[in-house]
Each structure stands twice: as structure tokens, then as C-alpha cells.
Image (cartoon, rainbow, N blue to C red; front, side, top):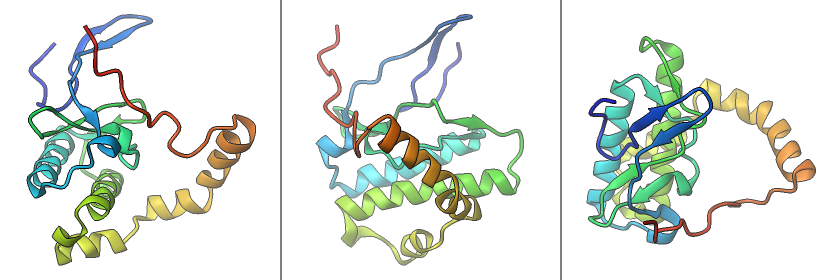
Length: 165
């Protein structure tokens, strides 16, 4: 179903009730703990290619959605909250900024000494969408997920099944 972007699962089959994507071998970021500047440069390029295809991931704060492949390159998974936008308007730029901020937050965790002054400025600037979400929707989300559903931080952040056949 098309060539796609390396590091992004391809859609293999899209049925009425089932979506099948290609498998990308890798270890979640919180297990691999990438400390190579090349990983974060490649992750930034991957994110630019994704955004150039008018796709916003919307869930890159989760380390589980960033993989480190066996050859040390980044890959992205879990596109349930992703969206496509027809044009690069204000909303796309704002959401894309948030995707980038989340990548840089991970870089700050694993390789803080490599942050550039530009990256530090990006980290310091929350988008309007992000500020509104933090002030309103996130409180509701946390109430539902933590109090009602009893989910905990990093739930699901355990090891992926890397012994697939």
C-alpha cells in the first residue's frame, strides 16, 4: 500500500473492522535509553518527514511510542491519536511544535548536554493548544484514567514482545 516512510509502520491491510500494520523491530526508548546524538538527529529528521506528509502524531510524550531499532535508528509506533491535516495552517504548526517539544523532552532526559540553545527555547515555549489542554482537558483525562480506570503512570511502558515470529 505504498512505500511510506522508513521508521513508520506501513498500512498492510485496511479492512472494515481491522487495520494491519507492518512490524518494526525495536526496543522502547525507556528500555534502550538512547544516548547517541545521532539517534536524536535521526529522530528529528523522521519527525520532519512525518510532518511533511501532513501527519501529526499527537502522542510522542510517551517513551513507549519511540523505538530504538537494532541498528540504533528511531522508529515511531502507536498512531491512534495521529491526525492528518490538509494544509500547514496554524493548527498543524502548533501540533507539530508539540510533537517536536516531546522529542526534545526525551533528548533532555537522555542527552541533556547535547541540547542546543534553539532546542532549549523550543522546550520553554508551550503552544496555545498545549496550554489549553493542560488547563482543561488534561484534568478530565487524568480524572478518568487515574480515578475511574485506575491506570498508573507509564502503564503499558513495559517491555514489548521482541520475540515475535
